[in-house]
Image 1 (tube, rainbow, N blue to C red):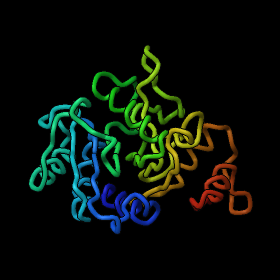
Image 2 (tube, one colour; image 1 turned 90 degrees about the horizontal axis):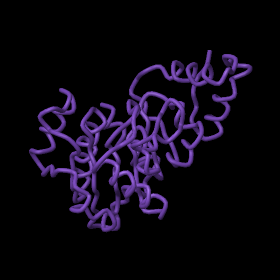
Image 3 (cartoon, one colour; image 1 turned 45 degrees about the vertical axis):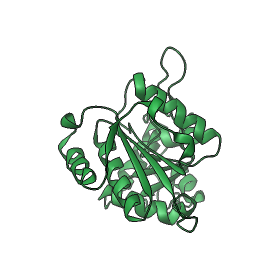
Length: 232
């Protein structure tokens, strides 16, 4: 389960985000209308199982969620409430952790409405060093280029201190504004071959495929960050 592995990586690579010794921990999970939101419901459930008080907010209509996301929504509502995403009703600043599960790698246009307001609030929180974890990508990023999908008013892109990506790093994690917006990036292993992602990254930058003797610029970069990706 990708989101289950997300929680496992969060405990392993970001223990400061789920430290239970302080007690009375509160998380706010912002879920979007697609499978990224579905992962958010799983993360909410797993945090609740760790003893956290969790508030979940949904941007969109639960009845229109994709099947997998809808299933995870139904599992969450057995133990907790889902409220509509209205930033005027959400106190992000009183939370110990904010989880951005609004939009992931499939986003192709700027955010609007409450999602835009949420992204701005997440960015403000992250820039202030208050814990924000993004599922796959900070909402509002183009993960093919690493550039923010900026609306006309010039804002509306989230940021995170820790981003947990599924399968492999995406271009947007390492290009342009990606490193600044994503913070520390860890890859959750969900049993797929990461070499596909590495090949795509290198091809996009015109880098020759790596070998075991010459692993390639991106493989070397990832290894320097503790992300070891096997190459042919």
